[in-house]
Length: 447
Ligand SMILES: Cc1ncc(COP(=O)(O)O)c(C=O)c1O
Image (tube, rainbow, N blue to C red; front, side):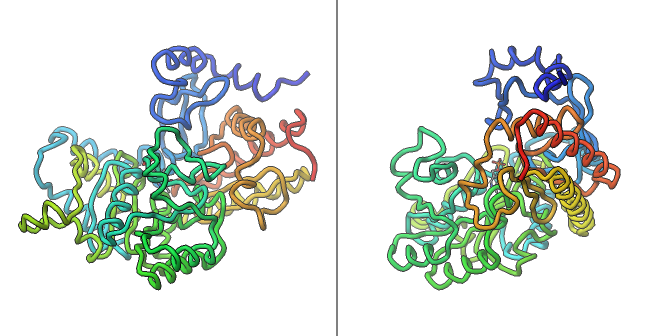
């Protein structure tokens, strides 16, 4: 009998397998810092990355469509980002004082991002959504935040309600009732939004992943983000656009530039720092003003948003952030990534059609998603689009890994500006082999 995907995965990765018991000894479920690294029978341990590729501890090479959770639009170890880090390293990591490089970094953000009059750097994407939500509450004097089913905004208490199906149960335990009660979770439906905005006078803001949930795994209807903008204006609530993935990737000015929509606040991370830790909130002057320290004791103690963070805007991340934003500003990286993503999507569609598999391929900008279960995603909601059987999703990702391709999640990926036609052609062979192997194993069937 032919070797199964799982058998090939185990055969190719003896060093990763040997490391796993040690990981499990030290980390819950073996995941050092992220639930997403946990997989059965063991995750592959990676050693290094360069350009569109990365290598594991067993010496296997991958064309990478995970790219540091979408942070590496410039590919792994981009020479200008590496050079910036090397130059900055000997000068120290923290001075507890303003740094000119940070100013330059902030100026770049303000010149690229349409809604950015002012910016505040934070430590991660999750911190950016936490701060944006606090600013919205402080600005409006109201408590509740509206968010959409399945949209991902990080892991803190105020974004866990509504993140995973069933959407009326927070995605994590340990979230206080008060936090849950302050979040209203809606399906992405403008009529539902208007009905809440018209009837509840305690709404501070609306937060949206403008691509649709999980960088477009669950796309939004055309015009939806504009609809959110119009309704948030009409009812005078703060619109937060979460651009942690779309920022600098959809275009140098993010999704807001593509759509010509200015949110009140936007959140960023990932590409912002050139792929190092960090994030930012940016927004219109009137909203960011709630962070001002004025010298008026009453105001400063009782009427402003407090914010700190030891490593926010540190000189290393400012250096890599400046190097990265300098490159992304031209739009060339995004144009190449989009072009290669389109080639990949077209090639993938051709493969699933040729094998007559009940699956479809979609995605915007430099992303791609494959849904196993139907020939079209029309009319499918977050529950359906994230419901492919776990063994199908896991075997798909591992089938690709044993053929030298890795994804960002089990059925989605992102591209960089340094992926080449040769990468795409080689990847399509891996996709072809994986689909065939999955059919041979009876994991997926004909339409
Ligand atoms: C849209 C979105 N918002 C927020 C976050 C959280 O960012 P971080 O993982 O840097 O905390 C993510 C992470 O993937 C994201 O995709």
